[in-house]
Length: 346
Image (cartoon, rainbow, N blue to C red):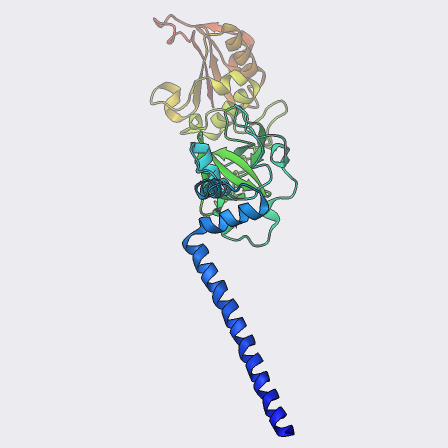
């Protein structure tokens, strides 16, 4: 009897397990059927939700429009103007780039609008050949001649200072209004185009020192008192002259500056000039001629003077007590010595 009850108990347990399992299978199957029904006909699910909640949901077509509008709102609009296109391509984060640009082309106040910093790129020991900022790359360039730096490319842009020959900067590749954009001390700046090169220019050669002025030769040690035998005037006058005639020319030239810039004839194949012993000091100024003649008379002994002829008169040391003696008329002013003082040495 006991074993019979035990067997009934086991049968009942198996029956309960089967029923429980069947319930789980039935529940899973019902969920799958419901999901499939909702996927095939979502309106059924929406209607059931509306019925239970008391709310009215927007139709599917309206929700699709709203989703598309939200998606479009997250996508930035495409650039339409030239400036928008430039900004969309330029992603460098440089101080002052987001500042508004005035009609003159200047940006708002910022580091780039102030004076140039005392810290220069030249202070760097090594420079990379290029620097990148976002999608933009700036390449190393050198200033080929002294150039003015501006805060912007506009015609009325503020002047920031100057860059000297050989200064290293970074060129962004951006050209506007005849100017080129560079990165200077980490900030954008502009210089007139045509002043950048790939290689550093050689510094200009040092200017040659000005020749020292030729010192005036000291008078010859044996020159008599009141006479100066230093080189003077046109040196070619001395060609073909004897030494006494050379000394006489230098003495007159140093005593009368007008003679140094005037005309004097020395050797010539005629008269007393043929031996290199005579000189003609050309002048139309009678006062100057009188002064030269008086100077020769005063220093006749020291200059070894043979004769002096001036204004159709002659004077010789050997007949000095007779003074100036008149000469015959030779027919023209030059022959009569009205336009030059003639002097000869012994």
